[in-house]
Image 1 (cartoon, rainbow, N blue to C red):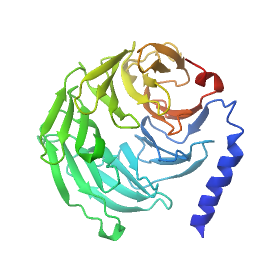
Image 2 (cartoon, rainbow, N blue to C red):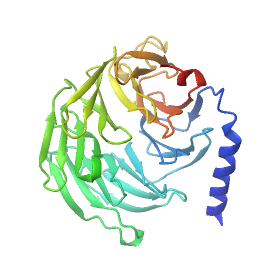
Image 3 (cartoon, helix red, strand yellow):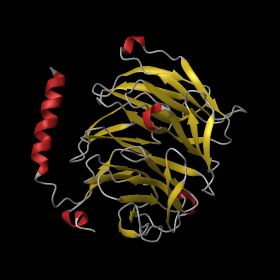
Image 4 (cartoon, rainbow, N blue to C red):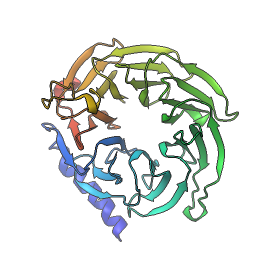
Length: 345
């Protein structure tokens, strides 16, 4: 069947590419016509999903950048996506006021959650039984995070909202499930990070360390801490239970994305001047490189250049040996680290 062919193809390709990786130059993926918004790897890391403002989330093989296909159905910018642990279901949140659920392999949309407002952040809980969906403030309705059930049997999927968390001013750019699905972390336009109790729907903690909008949140592998990226030109590391600010990484540009290495004590920041204020085309002038910092010492280790516009999205491969960046220029770049990187002490 098609399915077994697909999986056999995945296996032989990974064998073929393993020896080619040692001396990899970045792989340039051109599949989006508009700025990138979000990048997500599946749990094994062999698939990478990219979202952009061009309405079509795209699936690629992460080792060589081969394009597998696109998911056609949205009528607006797609802001975020998430993928189940078994890689079978993709969920996407879009400005067309919907959150869609897709069959990853066939590209068929099997369910649409319809809202009155644009949808921004989507995230699956651990175990893939619940999903949180954030809707933007619109026509006097405040921003909210809605929790829905993900049915194991796709025919039984319903649009019933189990709970809605609302209160904050301004839109919610990111929502993540905390450890054991007991909490939800949100960050957005007002620069405040909030920790919500899923059971009661109340706010447990708030952190107002950032001075401007929060663009991105990313949890560590063990979910004990997370990093936030903000337009106030900093990224900060927080404790995910208490929201205590542990570290601050200062950049010389607005930070749009920050990610944590799954294997080393490193983080990567990406950003750049706002697209509207960029007047130069030189990729050095606008500061469009990804910066690697020590997680503990906060110092910068180095930078990786390449994009011709601000970096909007970053994702680290689950094995920690490569990462993907997506820019305002519509390009996606897969960077495989060489052996020198792993010798950095």
